[in-house]
Length: 217
Ligand code: MN
Image 1 (spheres, rainbow, N blue to C red):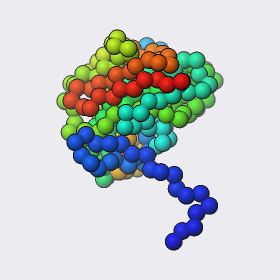
Image 2 (cartoon, rainbow, N blue to C red):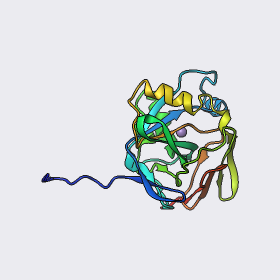
Image 3 (cartoon, rainbow, N blue to C red):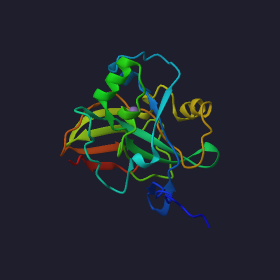
């Protein structure tokens, strides 16, 4: 029996649609600029460069219909709707969901300009709202959409991705040993923009449980 100075923190986990089991989160990997039109809007090359990755802490997930709070240290919080792939044994996809990669865009811009890491821009508390997982994948050409207060801000299709899920996982597995419990945020289409306290966000991928939240103070 282990005697803890600090007991292990509760394991973050995602609900699964139509299933009483939960998916325990081990790591969260995210792909940057994986849709050509979004890469262009961020001033980057939209040909087919190798994907690049950043990560968020596992406990950044916001689940079960909870609402994230507007984070400190930013005046420009952005939404990015993304297909989230949940990995099982051997790093193979077992679940699919809708996530929002919340981003402190001002902090990210300053980090880019200074050649510094993105952790504070991307990996802050409550930066990864996620819907319930589906155990069935969406269609390859499913629509992906994000609305704020009922107004569509991002709209695309999963096959607009520069690197598809298989390609993303192939590249990621050259950098890390992907394992059961990992989540991979696969990038966002164009139309990213700011959120304010009180904004109601709806993020939808055709065929998956939708994600809805309201930005709290
Ligand atoms: Mn993103």
